[in-house]
Length: 427
Ligand code: NAD
Image (cartoon, rainbow, N blue to C red):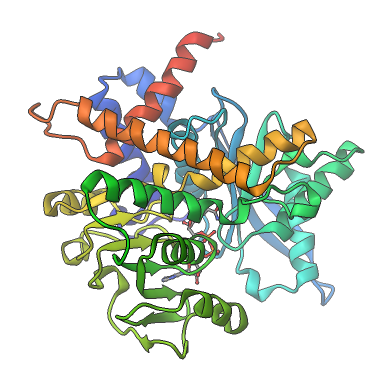
């Protein structure tokens, strides 16, 4: 298990700190806290893969099911050289709370393989993905554990997983995984769903604050699925101005607003924002960029106690999972920055994953407008539930007012706990 050098950057510790703060507000007893905190199951797989040169290489894979009281474990699979059991455990718990905030009938899970996929050929990646899926075919299933894409995985990998599982079952079973290509049982609107959910949350927050979104200046960190779509929708559908964007290749800025469509085309061709002709390179940190709305949409731990004081945005909309550490949260709160927490802000992806799973099981597919309308309904309701929880908690209590993050956790914990209470304890 990887040990984070700086405990502030250990996502599992951060996830636990967030949970404990909310659980304490709800006055949960220590046993109940433990029940909701511990993962139900955490697995490590060593996966042998035949490389193209004929040599065998071992890869380390993980799958964690955090809580399955409300339904099957749900959560993506990440391919990254830094993936660890701790990171996957943190991400799995965030999925439990996210599914509960969005009020969809899933628990939380997450998986990952310690690999830099850029160093593998397509055939090697396919063999690795299939080996991982085969190894986990006892856990995976439409009623038990339903994976989805995450960083560095997408439709292609999901199709391979659906196929591998179907081969083992000796029948086609598409509802085992979501985020599939449309032709293989994917849902209309799934690719854009997370970014669309982020956009809806930003719209709701602006409405709540009485702040105009048209013309608002937005900086987006991470220009992949979540960041790219969020930027595109904010520009096209809301009239916001995307003034800076970054990814692993670098960062670019244009105070007059980036041409997002042209930037997306550039990224598709050149595999990064760097060198985009319609902008200047940004040499300072995008987190500290002068903007109204900051969308961290890359990886964890981007806003820490080292840089939080220099965040200039009024709204931070967490497209990524875990981009803000608990210490940074306190600093942002004291500055009056409105953080839309990950478990609410990026819940659009899992919500449309749920719709995909429903459509697979019905064998009846909805048009995009219906998917988007149902997504909006879910996101607006979730946003309202979290705001209502924040407003219900007593700001004059000795602990002070709760942040939106803690309010979101409180909504989620109450929902998961209620199901545990109703189902009772099997002993
Ligand atoms: P992706 O692989 O499509 O994109 C990730 C982006 O982050 C890429 O542009 C990459 O270049 C960039 N990046 C990596 N390191 C960076 C760095 N140091 N600085 C700036 N940019 C960097 O992944 P994604 O699906 O867009 O996921 C992004 C985040 O959103 C992750 O935290 C993921 O867990 C979360 N998320 C994704 C979904 C989904 O549906 N895809 C849903 C919910 C949450």
